[in-house]
Length: 216
Image (cartoon, rainbow, N blue to C red):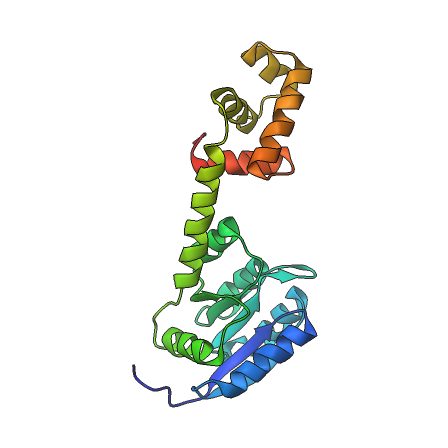
């Protein structure tokens, strides 16, 4: 792989001081030349930096969860203010659905925060040379799909019917009428389904239904 000649100009967007320090320490050990142009703790700070100096940047190292929004907000701003900048997301908590959303938005790299210096160096080099580094993101998505399908297989036929009705926006009474059971039975069945699928709300249940194809 061709060596990087000029400093890679970076912005770190991360709200946790210790994590930022860890990233900076890791950058000091990577095998590619880097120059840190700025740091941001919030979406607001990141967008402010992008407005002033975004076109100087090569890569944004971006955390997903931020105090005033998410990495998606920063990505949206970057695409408007400095569309040529490359974006690498570092995250320890993003699940499959979030990772897929990030990858669909056109990020150039995805990796966990516990990455080693040599791995980070490889990511930066690859991204700068136009080779997206999304292997870890694809793995998370695949794991998420498998987990969803495993959970789906725990549902009975009637429980899957309930999920489908919920996803179409029917009320509890309407679902009860469709399934010829009482509203109380619907609520009890929903509680069982929530537990089996690991969801906490009807909105999460609807998202699950779309992910696994119970509704189109």
